[in-house]
Length: 325
Image (tube, rainbow, N blue to C red; front, side, top):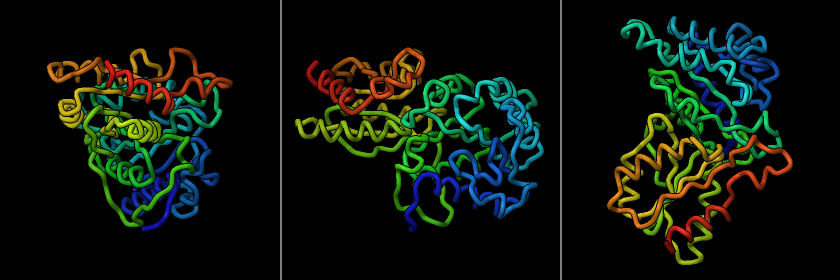
């Protein structure tokens, strides 16, 4: 296996797809010769040509409108939205067209070949327009799948599965980890099943659940908790829609406690859906109230980014409060 960072792993998945499907196209703002603002598509235009890897006008709604049309004709459409913060002009195309295309046609037409990649989250001092985590907006929309990787190995396998899935998929990439997260990744093709959470570390006292960049935080918190004699079960949700209720419920039935952490603001974040469902599924097994350690209900602050983002110390405080309840 090769040593890759997350950008290399994503590029590898896209390269495999482009070689596999002669009609596959990569498009978005600056994805061509420039290789994308983070260089995720670097080298692909030179390899596959300007007719298959190309820049679009600066119109997110137009990018997704074109993507829906291309995918409707059966070609793998690999659209990039430069930052997740920019996805809102395309919201109508995604939730009213991409998500409903199959349903409204009675399964005669679909855009299942559509994959939308976008970097999300903070950690790069990007301020309020380059740091948001908008996954919860789309989790309310039947017809979509939402996927978030935590490291290079997961990124390549989950992206390949997203591209091969017969549904439109939103693939949120934690930009803070693009170069910071490295690891061994197979150079050949492989996929990781969508809709399945992964138990990263087994434990007995409390379940910690997160996705994307926040996984690094809860793993750090679990280590700190272990030093104080608290055993944490650490789970990566990986797929937000559909999410793996069974794996989470099984863990919470064992530990009796759950802490959910995400970067997005706490109010109506996807953690709220998890808490409601697990409370219903595991009510008689709970030893303490389910806790959320999340971003604040404010616009993402530039100067106070470290105070805004949930860190290992905040998660550890929640762990101790849950165990001592």
